[in-house]
Image (cartoon, rainbow, N blue to C red; front, side):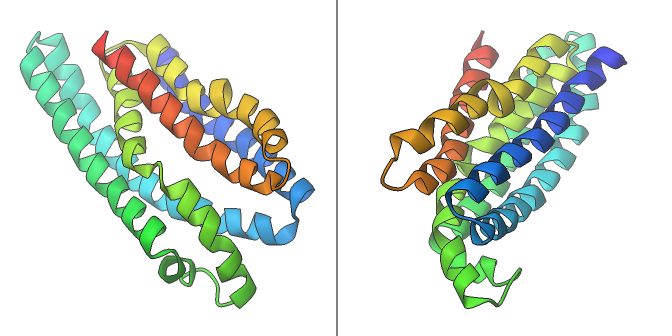
Length: 203
């Protein structure tokens, strides 16, 4: 029970610490307006992630049962359907966030300065949402078939293995606009962790 539950626990704990690191970077390079913008984008992503988490939790008992029964085709069918549904949901956020950012930002605020400022970070962060759903499904898939170590590793790749070094590195690479480095580290870590999940799934 502890081994299986450790993966989502690590992911949630890491998420909390990452928000602290990101807010610290935003405060350092811009201030309250950047933190407000990140708060809006983070809520948008979190709403999408909650829906995907519900779908993946529905997949887990189906995948686990068929794995135990050695019905591997049915198990992979469950994974494929869940991954497709999750990708459709995250793709909707990608389309809205990249092409209609102002429309969705106005749900959270009517302040003109914050709306204008939030447009760029929303587009940058949402550009990687196409593949986030697949990564989340893969993490929960490994948990459901009794491979918690792989699940824990994948849980920590985005939040710790990739994101923390990028937090320290990217603002210095974008010396003319360090805030742009702060925003870009999020989609870059998403892409790297999704590729990691894909290669582990193939193996």
